[in-house]
Image 1: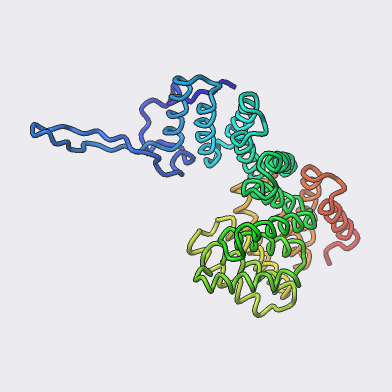
Image 2: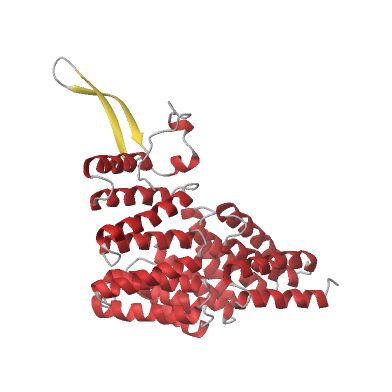
Length: 387
């Protein structure tokens, strides 16, 4: 790939702000272009101010470095990394960003070596993006390489090495390898405490990740006290309504549900949901996760119809954001199928599970527990058709 940024296509000359694509409108201006008029007294009067979108601003900066320093200069590659980071935040530009990150890693490895901080930072950006795009297997491969290489370059306890380990642990959760994820999150947490002490904000965030991993691994009796302790520490710091506090309370609600404390669980979950819908909007990923948790509680309380309505809304929102074949969409479809089975809508549940089986096979392989579980439920439905 030749690294160049283009200001406009032949067919978009003269576009104004209202004609920008939704992807281009999403991010705030990175800078302003200001036109002034100088009066006879020497004073300048602002005539017009035009916001420069981030992808244009950083694209121009990258092109300037390209022209000034050449295509292979480290500063040029860093400028294009910043430009690519902006693209990665724009809907409709992520495939382009992924391809650019891959080329940047290759070029930086040639110029600096792969085991170099700049190259590994770009590789970490790539790992984050491919995970967000749903390619968990590739994300694991990249994060594991970054973690190993940072350990070699910086040492096992360096903050960047621990960040890579945390990124890898999160992908292991995505792959439903919870035992590995929990162990790695625990190792990161222990090392952070030694470096920073128990009350550092970074350590508290790692406490939250470890507790969430325990919950995802169905180790509810361990997750509940860990989450209660974290919430108490955040309340002491008056940070209970921050993102970490909300996440901890949501996970506590899920743990309470699984442990059978349904009344307290519903109060906690509904309280979290009100705050998150107000602060982040109905379609935010965290809000959709909380809807899933609340639906699980309603399912446990045998309020199947309510749970099904909620999960249909979640599935529609996740599908809009990620597409029908994304792992998050598949998991949402699986959750809905489970509730529909208990709600007596077995024909629809079977159709959903057929899609889940096929997608799980594609994403995780035919022997993965999620694939096998979908197959087992399909077999059960064939033997137990709708009554």
